[in-house]
Amino acid sequence: MVAGCRTIVVAIANSLFVVALPVCAALPGCEMLGLSWSPGHPGPADLIEVWAPRAPFIPAGGSYASSVAMRGTTITIDAVQTPTVAPFPGYRFVPDVEQQPVAVFGPLPPGTYVVDFQQRHYDATTSATTPGCDVQQTLAVEAEPGPVVLAPVVEFYNAALDHYFMTQDQAEIADLDNGRHAGWMRTGQSFLAYAKGESDARGGPVFRF
Image (cartoon, rainbow, N blue to C red):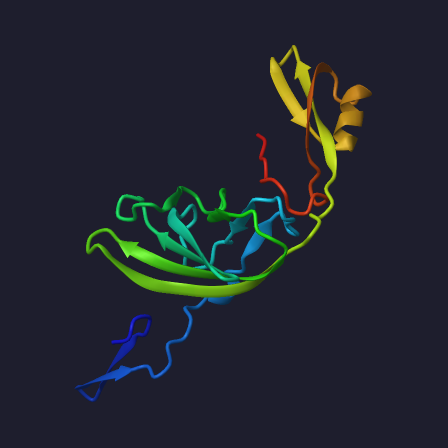
């Protein structure tokens, strides 16, 4: 059987037929495995993070081992879904593909590149890998990086609750400063962070409780 192809076993009137599919089609859901970059419009000084949204057949929190190889203007990412990186020396381990980039490379000279994301599945019981999705997308590296917006993240403290709260949202900052939610005061601590939706996909998402 050709790697990546499947066979179908069909029983008709107690007779058994084995039929090999003539075309090795992509797995269902592969079309949803679109890649994204951080930053979205990288410049020649940027490290480029590659994010791969979870396709329907990939378990939530799936871990990967990945490697990056470059030949000319083609960048090949070998991403193996595996619980451990041990069988793949030299690969980078990604414990949770939804929270971390599946690959990082660069900086690259300005130009147009093809990113070939080859996904495989590792079976620890058989030590074998089976092919999954193969997704190709074009990546443009610009002479100048995309624009970014930085905004302060402000820290507040509530003595009655003994709780700290940090926010970048200007409406929340105004409400807390104006006493709309009683008991909260600025601690005087703040830091700059990329503004959500205004920073060319730079940085990773931050969640709060």
